[in-house]
Image (cartoon, rainbow, N blue to C red; front, side, top):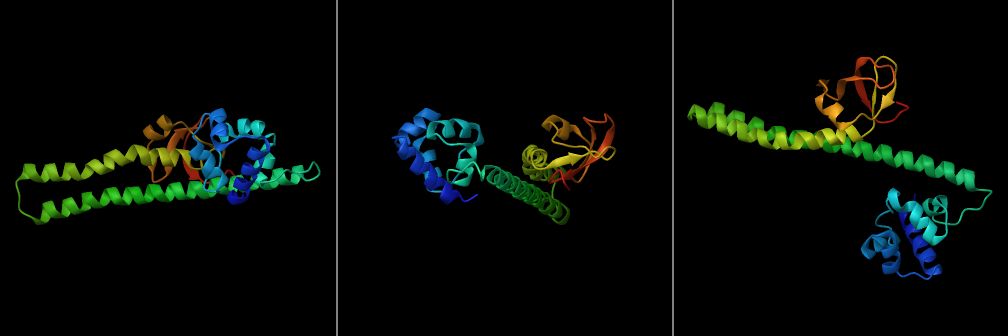
Length: 204
């Protein structure tokens, strides 16, 4: 999807229904700054307000995602192209999220390694060494829930038994025993407890 093209299209349709950015924003319950970002191609409307936006601009969602009014003859083709593009963007977003998780993990482990080396290499009171080690673990403890949330949201978990791919609840992921990104969880489809591997797409 071309955000700049879509942004210009939103601006044109807004003007065609005689609305200012502020008036459109008020109808949608958002800020006019958000509307401005859409129209300059810096961001896209959130999916939660797309239907309301299209109703106000008197267009379809396909028109919005295409950046132009789509004829009936080309409707199915444009729908397919936009769905493929949305899936592709989700996959790329999931990859970025998982890379972020790795970076977070590395950044949190480094202080622990440095602290451990210092405690072993520098003579100090035992209690002080313990305090330093525990203090170095704080970033890891703080970041872990956020890293798990990233892992839970990105992609799917595949059941080892039946191959079913699902996005489990956060609590299920949080409490599941794991090896790297493979977690021991109950499958929603077959009901068995199996090792479920992280997959980015349902076609992996």
